[in-house]
Length: 266
Image (cartoon, rainbow, N blue to C red):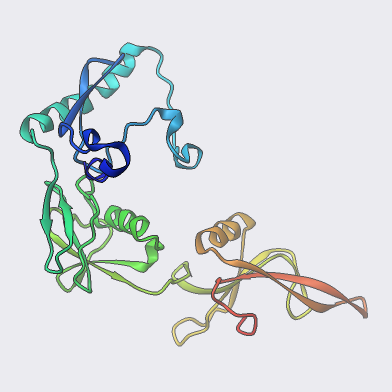
């Protein structure tokens, strides 16, 4: 509905208003399935026209028949019919926060605020736990999940705690790079290291603190590459003197550090 209201100058006034619900017939639900046009997440796409489908698709299941598909979607069809009956004008209502900004309020959705007091216009009506809410909010804020802290009042919520319809607070903390509850400083490729030695395994170098004395440990290449991807670490190269059987030669040493780390800090 929000998109429709803004479409007038581009598509003409006839597109700016439409019914809050539409019924979409399909082979598996011949009587149609109700969809709420007031919800921003309702988008009319054919499967293979979904933007970035290759990156978003998690699982593809092939049904043996239309009848089997109909049985699979029947609970969803029934649920949407009940929602249509209960909320004929749509499930969204608009309100205004103290700063004058409009936002959508969904029935059954917790309200989410940054510590600054700004409300996040994010739909969490299908979220039940704080861990799920954290994932959704991190994606909305384009932040890493480790940066998001969920609060109810002054208490931080654990991942398995239920969020209900409560007012939730969100605190954003600086990006942290943790593995096995230790702060990761650097990931080192197997091969020549920065001191001219040679290692046959990938390694993690941790920050040394009062409570963290272990500096390095070996890890598999699979874990190393996953951490590099998750942390968005950058690859660095340093030319060192590699000593071998009494002689030395220049060799490249490769390691990975946070994007914001300068060469002098690595």
